[in-house]
Each structure stands twice: as structure tokens, then as C-alpha cells.
Image (cartoon, rainbow, N blue to C red):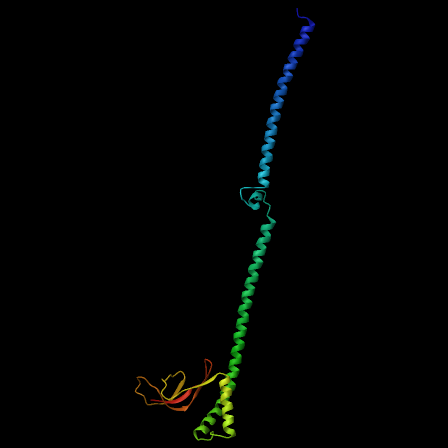
Length: 205
């Protein structure tokens, strides 16, 4: 027959063994929970601050959130491209206006210089007759020629020059047609820069 004291001791020992086993199981579960929590924390840290060189856009792409820095950079690139395009258009406009302005100036100057050529023709005829050897008329003629030279006006059309129908007006052709040259110069031609103010009137031989 078992004594009450022995029964209590055995029961106490059984409960103690059960408690120890339960504790060990609890500690094992707790350790697994801690490990899982640590692994989850590490994974979250990797997502929050990637170290493999990926951008913030890739890290936050799964959540659908846009990167403000990337959006600002895209807007900056767009505005920069617009500014460059406007600057190029303005530069082209300025060059076109300057070219047109210079063309207007050259046209107006050419018109005035062309009107002076009739005076030059009269002075040349006076020189051929010996009227410009001395005196006030010679001084006037020299000043007119100096004015034309200062404006870049050049005379062309000398006897013996090759005939060029673009700048020479032939009133008579005495050549054989192979290599025509200028014969008698009836009226000199004049050019202002690359522009012909008046063609030369010649006889071709």
C-alpha cells in the first residue's frame, strides 16, 4: 500500500518533469520566433536600404510609389530641352534678321551708287578730251572716284579681257566664236562687292 507521502512526492516529481519539458518546448518555440523576427527585420532593412546598387525606384516599385527626385529630374530635363530649342530658334531668327538687314542696306547703297555712275561716265568722257588735266573739275573728279573706291565700287571691262556674257553686254560681235575677248569698251562696268551695279558695254572681237 502506497503511503500518502510517497504518492504526493511521485505526483510532485511528475509535475516537475512535465514543467521542465513544457519549459524546454516553450524556449524552443521562443527561439524560433526570435529567429523568424530577426530574419524578417533583416529583409525589411534590405528593402529599405538596398546595397546592391539598385535605385530607389526599383526598391519602391512594388509599392507603386514614385520617386520625387526622379520626377524632378525628368521635369528639369524637359525644361532644359525646351530652353535649348528656344535658344536655337532665337539664334536662327537673329541671324536671319541680320542677313535681311544687311541685304536691305546693300540694296539701298547700290541704288545710290548706280545713280552716281552717270556722273562718272561724264567725267570719263571729259578726261578723254583732256578737260581733267587741271583745275577744279579735276579735283571734283578725283573726289568722286575716291568716294566710289571707299565704298568698295570697282570698275571692270578692259580691252583684251575674256568675254563673259554675265557681266559684259556685247553690242557687236567680231569674233570667230572660239575665244572671244573684249575689243572696244563703249561703257565700263561696275561692281559693288559681289553685286554687279552695271554691265560693261563692249564690242567683242
